[in-house]
Image (cartoon, rainbow over all chains, first blue to last red; front, side):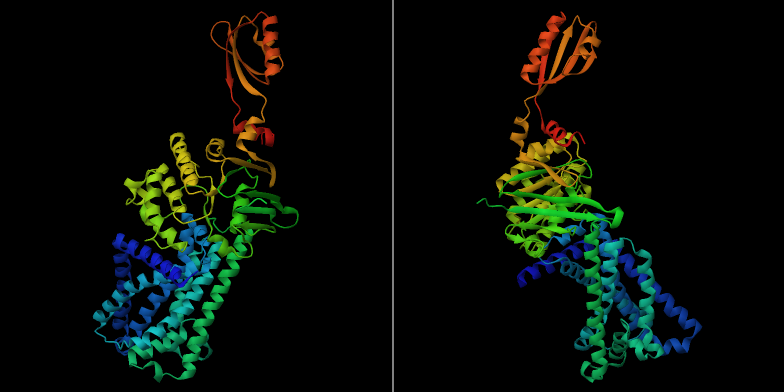
Amino acid sequence: MSAAGYARLGRAVVRRELTLFVRYPFEAVGAVVTLTALFGLLFFGGSMLAPRAMADSTAGLVVGYFLWVMAMGSYQDTAGDVMAEASWGTLERHYLTPFGFGTVLLAKSLAKLLVHFVYAGIVLAAMLLITGTTLEIDVLTVLPVAALTLASSFGVGFALGGVTVLYKNVTSWLEMVGFVMAGLIAVPAFGGGYLFALPLAQGSALLQRAMRDGVRLWEFDPVALAVLVVTGVGYLSVGYGVFYLCQRRARRLGVLGDY
Amino acid sequence: MTDYTLRVENLRKTFGEGEGTTTAVDDLSFAVEPGELVGLLGPNGAGKTTTIKSILGLVLPDAGTIDIGGVDAREHPRRAHAKTAATMEGARNQYWRLTVRENLAYFAAVAGEDVDDVRERHDHLLEAFSLTEHADDQVRTLSRGMKQKASLASVLARDAEVVFLDEPTLGLDVGSAVELRSQLRAVAEERDLTVLLSSHDMDTVEAVCERAVIIEDGEVVVDDTIDSLLAGFGTRGYRVTVRGAEAESLAALDDVDAVEALDGDTLCLDATADSDAFYRLVGRLEEMDARIEGVETREPDLETAFVDATGGA
């Protein structure tokens, strides 16, 4: 398939997501309101219980929450999309393409993440207003660090997507992984050691420093950046591998399109 | 040498292991020529859907070769998928929250096509399936029959050589099914599509297809043209109305399938016979002093051929 073909695929999946986003604004508004309200509870609750600690860590909380919202989108949308497509009977149609099953699902997940970024951006603006905090947003630093950070949660999403292809409904696992993600984002706050090899942890640490302290990409320790690259690419590769094996087993068992 | 668009050889698929192994497709072979419309028939559990899914790679076969448009589909599935389009059972298979036209555009793009280049084809498809005035309606707002047509149109939205249709008229009322069959056949002929259609509905296969491959227990039991299958029946059905005879005596005659009492002393008998046997039957009725009031004949249909091939499975 030519590069133009991949571009057409990208346009089609993004157009579909944006069409649904515009056509069902109530869902989008609901997501923004819920996520902002949850942050408000955390912030005001923390401020009442431990005002000094909260004042010292507000910027970290804002960055961590923003990262959590994006990470939830990247893994939940991938796995949830497989579940939804199976129930609609459209999953098998995405296998029958010259791009390959994994490529189409990745394109769809990225398109969903793009829409999710709109929610997360609004929530971030609301958080900054609520807390009165300001953040350093150097695009050249934040974008690559965030992309590599989310690559690891995409890996988790692909692995769960593969499990979904086999077992169809993994809702309870999705919820549990959401809590685990929050824990992984908080790893830098508790020190780290080998914990930085876990998904999201290293990215969370670097993103905090970039957005809170204004550290630029070239000012990071090269070893820290290498860990970010290895964990991001590594988890994405492993997740894709799990997805590939699961879809192959699903086809061997004849359950790919089942729901 | 015959040119084939689809060739399946020695296809085999089993499910389960050990004593619980089920053979769904057993050494199945057939070929389809370019532009041919072939029906895949078989009783429940015969292996029709598994056969189609194995050809498409949605199910991994254990053995066999599959050639689609000169491409080894097991070796190069993505290249083979560039030549195929398929729909599996029923009306869903599309996004109900998108409009009909949006579905066509989306599934064409997922096949790698430039939506702007194929807009004319999509307009034509919408017209062919009488969907033009619903093109901008969300699929969820359409009737069942319209949804099924929209699904079929979205499958044909891409430029495929071979189209696989699994139960395309499932769940439709008689009127909608008749309309969909004729529209499908017209589009397939116009675009010179090669079609493999699986259906329980014999009328659909008879109306759309030129050839039928009947499978039973995962094996091909009949592979012939529809015309040849129907012509192969020397027998036809007769419905004879008679007066002045006893029902028991009529029921005992050779070739009589059933006897039904109408009003008064009028009886109606159903018989299946070739022409010689029918003349013998008429002779026996005259010997019994039964008066023949009328005779209706029933032509054999694909259902008769199917029952004959599968032993009424």
